[in-house]
Length: 112
Length: 115
View 1 (tube, each protein chain N blue to C red):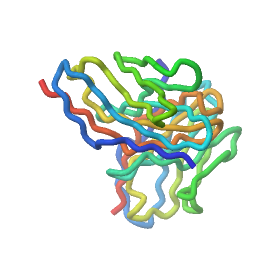
View 2 (tube, one colour):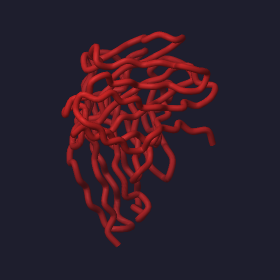
View 3 (cartoon, one colour):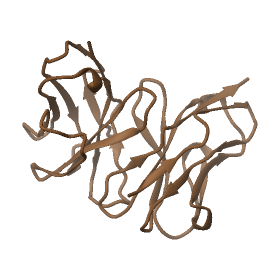
View 4 (cartoon, one colour):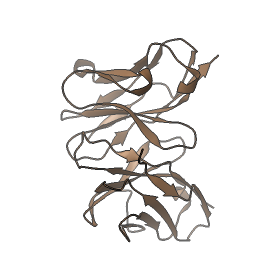
């Protein structure tokens, strides 16, 4: 079975500061890893994904994540937070044809 | 840009009533999914659907739930007799191809409240 743990249900950063949202996964087979973002009253939007190949993945809106197999992690980062980044962020894992398994989500607040 | 749409955005119902949640997946997609998120909990998989039949379902998806693609555009989730614990946000998703690396595109969700 696969699982995802997101450390911190709520993260607050100042505008212009580094954003770091943590995600650790458990999988007995090579995982595919995803980060989704949910803005208020909207659906889940894909930020980025790792399937194979380069372990540093770049996504939309300046976000990136690095797959670290040895640490079973897929942390999401952005060098400089913007007010518009305030949202709920979900890490998810699957493999092959299995359904997505999500973490509980991390709410990001950006303080002016 | 094509998107998944869901109606209604909010639904309030009495316990024991039937509800139908509707989704319009992206038009050329072939694989459809329902997920739900109980307040404060994880987004959980309910069911996947391909070629007019269920391809996988979770243990949450019991006999009270059913899915249907009644025409070429809609994909519905029916809860026959709602329970208090069915209160949740329900997300529909679709993808072009099956397979873990294929992106699932999500709708905005339907918030269901069972009283």
